Image (cartoon, rainbow, N blue to C red):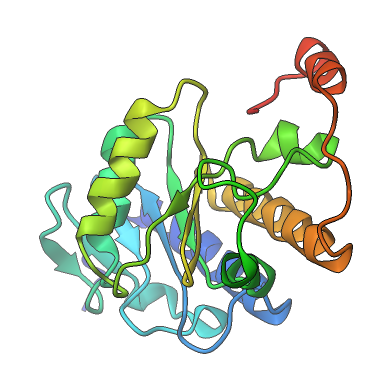
Length: 225
């Protein structure tokens, strides 16, 4: 039987599997936690690809990725992740997003357990690349995993944030990030997790960058902060 999707999807499917394996091998995801989705172009068949529910990102079979239509109707593959509603709402609220990635990254979850810096910014501005690559990351209140109301919380944050938002942190669960490709989303996640690790390793003593240092970065680079 021939595959039920266009050949143009195959490279996207392989990229999702590559990113999932890389995250798993480096301990940024574990067990069956986490999910990845990609918004497809019309040439690729439209709709979204998303990892199956309870799948281990380290061992994704590209052929088993769930292909769903724009309204979430299943088109092919395994059953979609229970976070599909959240992913779809992010795509609707952030037109430039083409990949959404959620993990239970250790240091970021630990940060919420110990207490974030502020609810509207889980980390202070500590490093130049945090400001340039990540930007502001608000905390989303705890919800049961898969609770569809998280989608409302995140969509509201995207709509009401003055500067572009590319990540949120779900209390006790983990970060959700979005970008223009799986590779870019993975890089953003890595920078965010590394900043949380530095903040925790230094027992949260470092002073944030000063207003003048932040202004200099904003003047010289394209920053998300």
